[in-house]
Image (tube, rainbow, N blue to C red; front, side, top):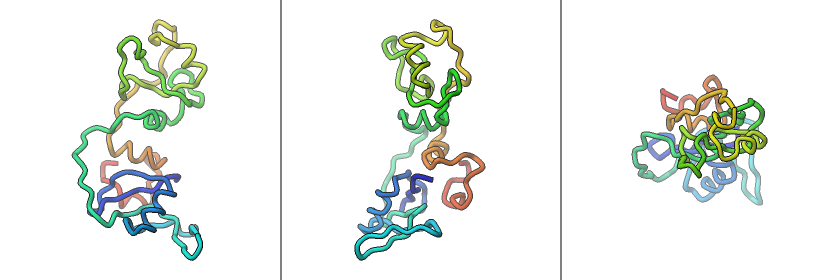
Length: 169
């Protein structure tokens, strides 16, 4: 797991942050470590902090209710598990099913992960015009699923973090 789960002061999951940011929040007393890696420690001059898996903010942060996850390139790659939607190889780019030049939007339902070769081959065309077939259709993940993807977890890999995430995740 590369990221650390951040809980609000009320123990509700907010987001994920890189390890470095999590340690800074703990050292600034803006967060406390709720769950740490059992064998790893971050050391500095005169300070030693367990590597956090889950941190909780010390002050409550008001978050507006969100029914859908915000779109991002990183989120699309995570949703598609870094696999090309056209050939199944490793994907590093995001392709618009309906190109932006033809009115396609940056949305969950219009973007898929793609390898650079297929992205360039499709170019400024729809998959049908380029003679390419999507292996899987794009979908809009729930906010809970997006949080799990950001943690680098799949459905069966929750383990010790299950207690911190919503029941539907």
